[in-house]
Length: 90
Image (tube, rainbow, N blue to C red; front, side, top):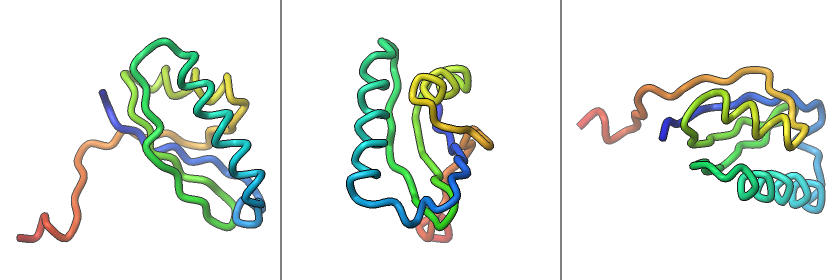
């Protein structure tokens, strides 16, 4: 599967309550299980006004299908080509 970064602009995202975050997380998990195709939500990063998600899927179309079913916005989606970190410097 390919790895994608998804940008979701959500004003006030950083002020969401634990219950609100749990609700959107449950929505995502439920939709992933209903897709009936290889798909993994890896993790998401909440900032003041956006949520950046890491998902693994076969294609960008699958990413968009998930977001549509969840009713989550997509303001950008990029396929990850290479992952680097401090270990890359060694």
